[in-house]
Length: 66
Image 1 (cartoon, helix red, strand yellow):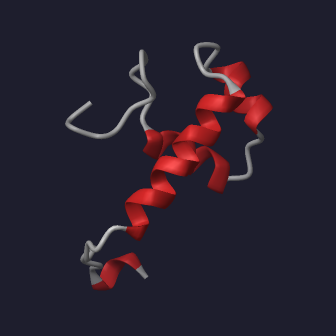
Image 2 (cartoon, helix red, strand yellow):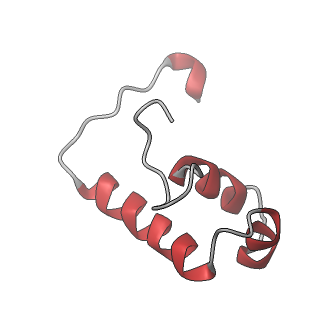
């Protein structure tokens, strides 16, 4: 998956889970779409993203991103 973090044992990226949640999909909808996921794995993806954002990393933002 091009080095992107994925849910263990799947090819489902943390990024795609976050995008679906940001778009308003519920955990139940995501699990229905990806039966290999569980609600616990979705919460783990959120936890991973939270820890990654706490790291001392600067993320460049282009003028187009706003």
